[in-house]
Image 1 (cartoon, rainbow over the protein chains, first blue to last red):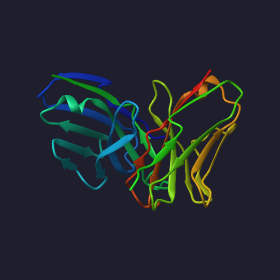
Image 2 (image 1 turned 90 degrees about the horizontal axis):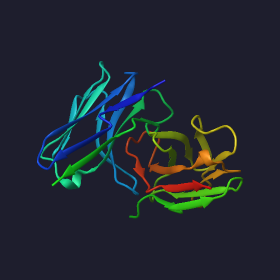
Image 3 (image 1 turned 180 degrees about the vertical axis):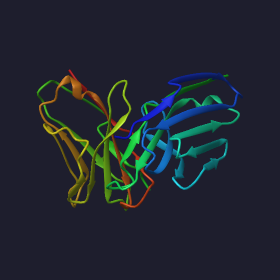
Image 4 (image 1 turned 90 degrees about the vertical axis):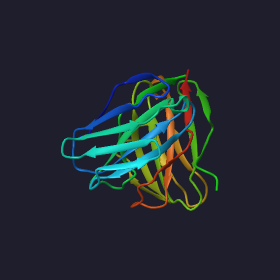
Length: 115
Length: 114
């Protein structure tokens, strides 16, 4: 059974800092890994999707890496801003599953960026 | 193009009542997923449906819970005889196809059972 763990559970940083969020998963037989952002009272927004054959993906100030063999992913946020404050969720899609939309989520990292 | 619409946003029920949660997928999407987020827990997959078919309900509790996605109208997640432990945020996501990796999530329905 796939399990996804995110560390740290919460992180508070001053504006402008670069930061790293960590995600690990127990079963390396994944199809892809996604990072989502969840704002209070709102749904999830997909930030980055990394295929199992890829090593990293970048979008703006965000960079996500994937080491499938060791079961780890990191989300790097450069020059953090107060608007980045949210819960960040890591999720994996299992290979050979019924669909790629059946995801296993971590419990998230609550990020607070203070001015 | 409207996103995934869920209603109601908040639903309050007393123990023993029925809860009906609705999800209208994005236009052109025929695949719907339901996830549940219990307090202090991560999002957990419940069920995956296509129009008129349940494809995977491996995450659905065996009793009291059911889901449908009719040919016309929204997908419905139905919880009969609710208990306090059913209090959670229920999220719906849609995609255009089984092979699609991109999921679009709704804002969720917060169910509170008194």
